Length: 336
Image 1 (cartoon, helix red, strand yellow):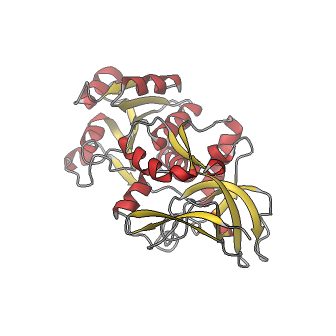
Image 2 (tube, rainbow, N blue to C red):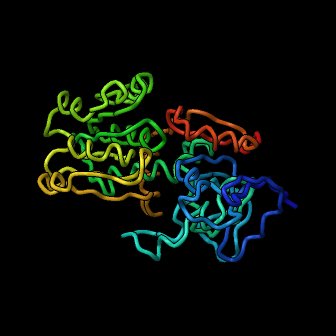
Image 3 (tube, rainbow, N blue to C red):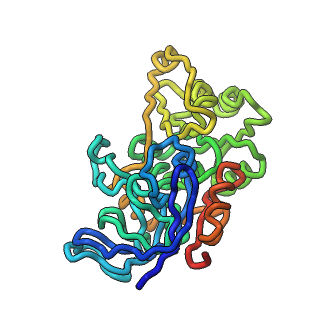
C-alpha cells in the first residue's frame, strides 16, 4: 500500500493529509512525484482568480518516476522519468475550447503530493540531462517562455527581445533567447538581479525603480526601431511602455498581469505601429516535446533559486508573491 502525503486546496486554504493513490485505469499512469515547482498561477488559483475544483491537488508543474501504467498505455513504462504536462488534452495545433478544457493542478489533480494518478497524456519523458528537481520547472514557466518567444513570438537570431522581470518565465526567456543568438534587454527592480541576468547573456538592463519611465531609457540606449518583441509580464502598469519601446511591426507576447489586470493603453499606437498583441497561456504537448529536444541539444538547465522540502509547501506559497527569487522556487518531495 502506497500512503501518500497530499495537499489539497479547499476554499483558498492549503490542507495536508495522507491518502492512498488510486490505481491507474486503462489510459492512466501512476507517478511518484519527486519534485514540483510553483508559478504565479498557483497563487492566483489560491486567491480565486482562476476557478478550480474544490479539493484539487494544486500545482501544474512536477516531475518524477512512473510506478505503474494502465493496460492501454503503450508509450510510457514503469520506471521511466517523466514530467507533467499543463494541458493534457491539447496535443498540437491552435488553441480551442476543447483542448483547453482541463489543466493539471486546477481541473485535474496536480503535483503537490507524493503520488498521483493522471491520464497518460498528462506526462511526457523528462529531458535526459535533467534531474526531477530541474524538470519540475518546465511545464508552465519554460514552455510559456518558449511559446512567447518562438511559437507565437516568431523570434529569430539577431532580433531584439525586451523581457520584463527575473522570475521563472523571464529567466527561461533570457536563456532561450540567447541560445538562438537574439539580443536581450531586461527590466527589473533590482541591480543585483540585472547583474545575474547579464551573467546569463542579457545585453542591456534597466532598473525600473531607478528609471520609472524605463521605456524612454530603453529607447535612448538601444534605439527607437530596435525592439522586435516584448515578453509582457507586468500588465496594467507596463503595457503602454512596452508599446512605446516596440519598432513598427513589433509584437507583444502578453503573459502576466503582475501589476494589475485592467489596462489603459493607446489604441492608436497599436494601429500606427502595426503592433500585434497575442495572449500566451503555456502551449501544447507537441511544443513541449520540441522545447525539450532543444534543451537537450543545447544542454540548457533551469535556474533554480530555492529548494524547499515538500512539508514547507505553505512557506513556498507565502514566499513566491514576495518576488525575491531569481528563477524558480522548487519543492523536493524526497525531503518532505
